[in-house]
Image (cartoon, protein in one colour):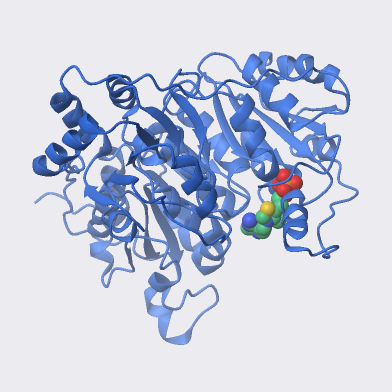
Length: 529
Ligand SMILES: Cc1ncc(C[n+]2csc(CCOP(=O)(O)OP(=O)(O)O)c2C)c(N)n1
């Protein structure tokens, strides 16, 4: 008779089959048995706080296109991670998150480190969550979790594993691959193609789901075939269209009335892989001007159901665009044009957001990736830093801060040899600052660019919008980012004059190593909206 594999052996085999041989974690006593005889074909990426662990895995999963495996420590580790789990859920990032649990025999006494109702804790921001009833079923639960995470719409899942399960005998749980997202129904694409053919001024709105689905080339082909201008959806976390293309029109604002005004010149709007729409501040007003027709193609049935207006078609955005190309024939090109590119700002005086973004645009090595969390400088980024290739930009889709600084090393781990520029506000950086250590330990080519405006600029801007003169807790005085970085083993440079921005960034990128550039900004930051 063949020896029965342990839960640990069966799980490691499953992880190999699913391509999840990188484990992101922060370990504790309840996870140790998972690491017994740790195999040489696995790598363990340690992050020093669990919100960083999950954000790093998120960056890795998005940049690699595969699910990432996470191992956390009981309820406390999951608790620290919840903010990043919320963001991963909104990002549609496939993560298999496991957490240690106390020994099963100890459950009745609520022992030290026991996670009561463990599977409930990360809900509702996981697609599926379980603590298997028997140790033997842990591998099957992990197989199912991976499948759910990778099914469209992708997202995080959770499995709680009691610490004595890893040495137990496993029930067989063969690996089962997951199918591609379904194609949109043919009849729906027929009707959409006809509407596009007869529209006078159609436009596309591209969301993160289009980039995740690998639809970049198809989006360009459809836009060119129709002569349709292309907008990026509001608060988008990934860019799905070349921002230097003549048809590229810019980013839509996350405000209802302003967005309806921006789309008013069009008679047909085709949204791909995005919610309809993501708003930030309530302004009331119309969702769309009368007479503007909207269609949505998304692989997320819930996104389809909750769209405020329009005809939603459920299916892969990429397959939808391919279906349209087949139906549109030679197309009906119109003479629409996108935006006029902003002139680069002069590089002198106290640094501004526009100067930083223009400098990154000019100097980021070919193939480089931008990771962003700089609330008041987002408009500068969209104006002056052009994303030109698929998978070239990542930002958190939830609005929760503390994601980007940790996601950036995850992106770098997934894309060996590619430079990563991580642009974050001083406030945002401090929600995930420990990630500097992981980046430095792995010698990842990430340049962390901290826009230090001495406080929470976005909240000050909100305050001005709401007529709140001086709310407490908005200033961040006495912080020394260069010293913090050095303490984490990451070399740092400080820039106080725009004349030195380009030489400093150039040196940082040229080092092909982890480094931090603190930019002391000339003012508190522009208005948000
Ligand atoms: C986890 C979390 N806590 C608090 C907030 C509220 N918040 C929104 S913007 C902001 C300020 C961010 O400051 P900084 O990163 O320095 O960028 P700036 O606004 O100055 O451009 C804060 C605290 C948030 N979005 N997420």
